[in-house]
Length: 226
Image: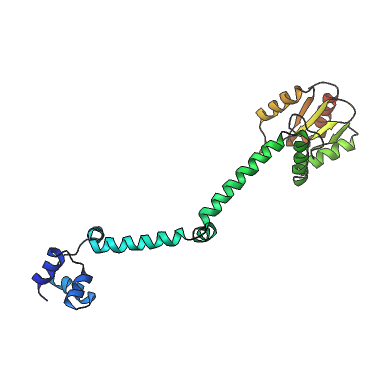
């Protein structure tokens, strides 16, 4: 095989190595070997793709392939299509279901009884923390008139206080953790409960370390001193 023959077929005739091999009745590997041996430059990948897609026979073949795929897809049911691309249909189904659930929950939340029921359910799922149990034991030890209602027994303005005065006084105790709550949240909670006539005592973890100071704070709350 001469340089002129291969060069004219490859670059002049715009044939691929496979087409040259077919015309000369040789293997594609043989054509590529002689081209490399004779120093004939090869097309880049992008040039080869552009050349292949510009040929009429390739366009006809690609067109028939896509037509067959389209016909096969159009004959499938929605369920069968979902099997072919489960992620897309599953995501679409979940979005539709979540939207319906969200709208139904928003409508139900307008009902005070439903709100109270859901909050109680959430509180039973999240039992009192170790620190809240310590505070509860401290209150019982000193006979203070407060009961634990952090399980959803009492809801004030959509919030569930941790302890409430069980002797007729309008006082509540909230126990905050530093990594869950901020000083700003504490002030906002006081203002919110004050709108409904409740005095609020915010306790932090450090308050449990000093029983004398803790007892004084609760007694001040009972006496109306914040």
